[in-house]
Amino acid sequence: MPETLFISDLHLAPERPTTVELFLGFLRGRAREANALFILGDLFDAWIGDDDDQPPYPEIRSALRRLTEVGTSCRLMHGNRDFLIGRTFARDTGCTLLHDPALLELDGVRTLLMHGDLLCTDDLPYQKFRRRIRNPIARRLFLWKSLPKRRAIACDYRRKSGAAMAEKTREIMDVSQVTVEDYLRRFRADRLIHGHTHRPADHPFELGDRTVTRSVLAEWQEDRGELLVYAEDGWRRERILPS
Image: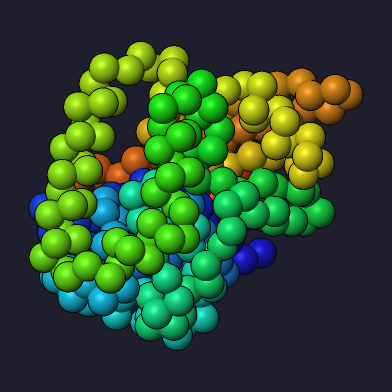
């Protein structure tokens, strides 16, 4: 049975060359063994527009194109850091952009895919900020700016984001269980897969008369990545190490 792979939160950036190389090696090898690859947000640490030609972005686009050309389907969801990935990137790489949330059926099991930030509803300031920057007018105004100006704005955002996160509790930045249950009920799903929180684990729990599972994907580091794999023998987690 073909495998389906799930990853998120790679946060690729020029400042993280080791992680970039780890991902490129994954695309050249392990990913080609799979039927489908789902990237559930934050592939990039900051995406300022599809016209950004700063290395290593052209190399990453080319590697994704080579993956899709050999037959591995790649589905890409926006994260909170790379929600400006657009149609040009999708066309250049052969990836398909996914809505958040997206429903997938795996052998008849309804599986809900999300980046995860929509589940963190206890963090009210972040949810307000998210709505503001995702406004189509705000996005258009940002993309009209020059590349140097956009890079400067993105750098300032990352600095302010880091400072804001340092002041928040772990509980505030985690998902709301009530919100998780609401989404599972709304989509009648038996499994939820998401990233964003960087707290990889599988959380089975009872929802009404059925057992459901929330699977959290891992953040990729310089020396390792992690996949959630669905195959004939069920679900498993798998490490990706430098070659």
